[in-house]
Length: 97
Image (cartoon, rainbow, N blue to C red; front, side, top):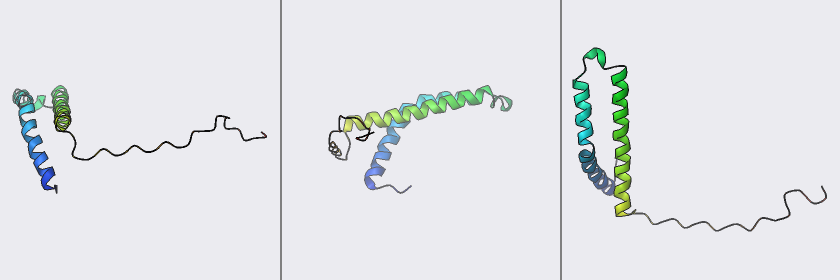
């Protein structure tokens, strides 16, 4: 993936935060898989693995957003559009109907 130097720095920062945030989750996942025989990997274990991986993804998103809130955003806020003229209060029926 081509990243700008600023994006690369952000990716590095996120990577370090994510590594520490999900380290215990990954260890637990590795232990779960190591405790299962080949015939037990699919079925119930597979769904447990998917749930845990989904939780890791959710933690990644939360970590990213929390870091951005603390630092603020780099881009300026976009201006709000101006309101259009006030709608006619007579309703939508054409005159004479």
